[in-house]
Length: 92
Image (cartoon, rainbow, N blue to C red):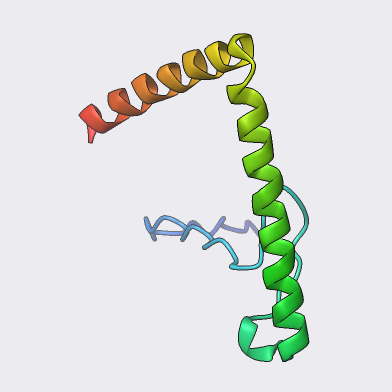
């Protein structure tokens, strides 16, 4: 007895998976509590950590600005990226 292959007549494309709010392009998925679930002390710690991180970022920016050779390379790369974005913008 011969068996027939069943074929799907549906032409629907599979739905793309929406990225999780908790996923990160740099690491595994980690649950991050919202500010509403944090205690007052935890929120204060988070604000302080963010301010310290911002300060490190500003220090690095000043370090780069004070070194003309580094700044020149950064400006070149920034220009290249802006040109690439302009090409994308024109296609849209």
